[in-house]
Image 1 (spheres, rainbow, N blue to C red):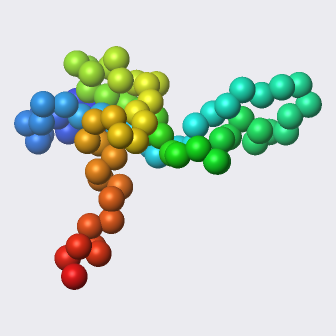
Image 2: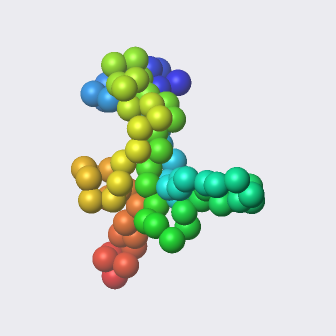
Image 3: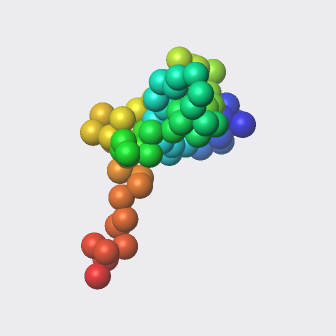
Length: 80
């Protein structure tokens, strides 16, 4: 799908990520959600990429690194 989108749109790169809570270490006896760190800022976990950008798969992006997080900003308030 990512390769098709890249060709169809003539984009330089296509990659898909999901906004998720970061994971934290767990210990014996923890419950099934102990690994989810809800107190931390969300990260983007990349799950798919075109052939030339496979190095992004399973990588994370934290807020403040790059421009990707801008897509989550609410621009409706600025429109007035």
